[in-house]
Image (tube, helix red, strand yellow):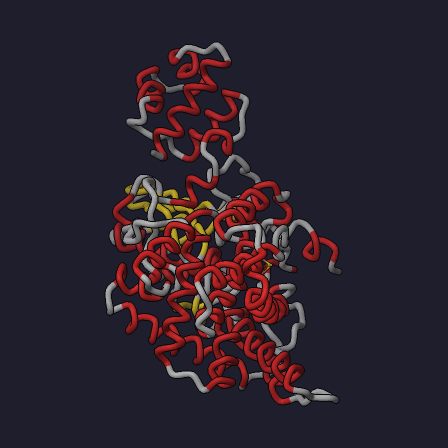
Amino acid sequence: MEKLQFAERIRKFRISRGLSQKELGERLGVSNRAVSKWERGEAYPTVDTLGEIAMALGVLVDDLIPRHEEARKVPGGGMESLKELYRVGSGPSSSHSMGPEKAALLFRGEYPDADLYEVTLYGSLALTGVGHRTDYVIKRALEPIPNEVIFDKTTSSLPHPNTMKLRAIKDGKEIGEWTVFSVGGGAIHIEGRNEYTPERIYKLDKFKDIADYCESKKIRLWEYVEEVEGKEIWAYLRSIWGAMLGSIESGLHVDGELFGGLGVLRKAKYLFNQRHMDESAETKQNRLVCSYAFAVSEQNASGGIIVTAPTCGASGVLPAVLRYITEKKQLDTDTILHALATAGLVGNLIKTNASISGAECGCQAEIGSACAMAAAALAEIYEMEIAQIEYAAEVAIEHHLGLTCDPIKGLVQIPCIERNAVAAMRAINAVNLANFLTDTRKISFDLIVKTMYETGRDLSKIYRETGEGGLAKLYL
Ligand code: SF4
């Protein structure tokens, strides 16, 4: 379907400009057979050719192949396993460090005989790659074979804002080349290489369809997850919960300055050990939840081990809410695992139908999604109805719409760390509202996800993890 959509578009634009296949081919320096194959959906141009086609037809690359199609990765609907959403790895960025690192490791595995690797970063990867240590993780993955990382900050006709090209060279000749899109949450899509694309094991990919199914079978959302993923998902989620708790615990015991030159001090330990001048149950709740969110986010900013939930930048929200409620209600682990499954379903729906990438849709896609996941998890813990879980997750996204991504110096520190704490508090508030107002709601979860995606596409590029606007531009 992806190819067919591109095929329909290129044919439509070519005809509207009065060009024959031969004339378009001549402009591009390719045969009319090549154009014919693209228009029949039998072949697909390379990233470079895609930019040339857009120029020849006087359109944007986005007009030929919307980013959404790349973000979805696999045509035909459905969703991937929650194991593709929750990943344990090193911060500070799932799209700028975990994704590129994975691409480099896979590439090295495919071309182990190369004597030189050349990796070119484009778009957001090039613009904020230094702050995110993208070059460092790539080099680490490719060593000891000599390698070079190039930051191309000028090429703009890209099919995805996080594009990278990897070349393997032996005896001065190229022996392999990949174009890779780092699509958020540590996931990558390798152009033309579907064998690296995870299977879509969930047949349903809309909240409404899943809710209808669960209600018809009288099961909860986490039971649907178990039905699709099998009982082994609980062992996986148990390890995820352990890693989340580990990142909180580590973050609460460190202080000092974070790397990167911004002079940002760690604050989790300080917050955890303070006492409000008029400490009530509510102010204590605020302080503790924020300290947990700071702890994970500071670990992430320093390259520590965290869980993508759904990304590195937004990794503090869900663990903070879950640890707080675990302590408050003395919950057993199974309850937390059910909450993680419910949150994962919500994150998966956003990832599938919109985006969880700040470079693609701004911070609403990262922090907004994390807030929705945390709200859904908490609502599950309170054993709320599915409609209430939906409303809590919807509210959480709705009030993050338009949130920009403008990290100073490309570091995942300001505004990211504090923002995790604020979003954790918002998740709790969203559940409180859902407790009372679900019957009056007008907006569905599926609609707000679609809106978030449309809003993200309309956001100026400077507010999508390029380090060119907002705080990144004005902070001196
Ligand atoms: S501003 Fe938001 S989306 Fe951007 S890097 Fe920070 S947490 Fe991620």
